[in-house]
Length: 134
Ligand code: HEC
Image (cartoon, rainbow, N blue to C red; front, side, top):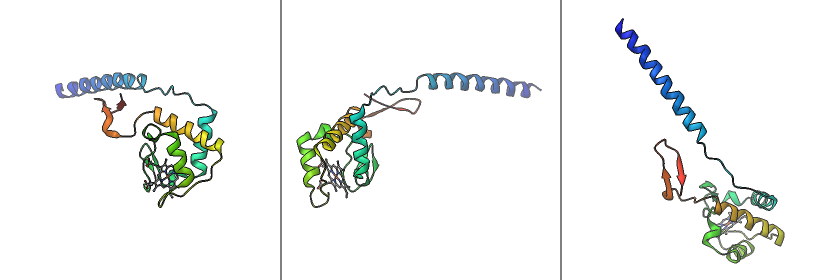
């Protein structure tokens, strides 16, 4: 009988821990306050229209023929990126984008870069298993 009583106490204890843990976890969820505007949105559509993602990754997701472009904006100058898109090279095809399209695409790459680093080695791992960026 004593054994049954302990089982009930342990079950209630675990339930209380589970409830508190859930409350803490769901009230501290990361909130994305990054504002997006129309230019960024257009840039994303251009990224999709020309299928950049077939060869390039954003946060490690996408094709693997070309490099990850999440932080490309910080690594290279706008002039370099635009020249690369316009001219291409042996492995990257060239694209005839209008100035407006290029401008929107640059805004999109700028926003991507400001959203964090795509390099997982810079991530901080929390005790609850979630990750954070400094
Ligand atoms: C067919 C595959 C393919 C597509 C589609 C493609 N790229 Fe690339 N891209 C590459 C490859 C491969 C490289 C690496 C070239 C090299 O370093 O020699 C590259 C390199 C680049 C670079 C230079 C990276 C660096 O820092 O050296 C930029 C910027 C870039 N691509 C932007 C774009 C954009 C923007 C689009 C969409 C409009 C796009 N690419 C579409 C294959 C592609």
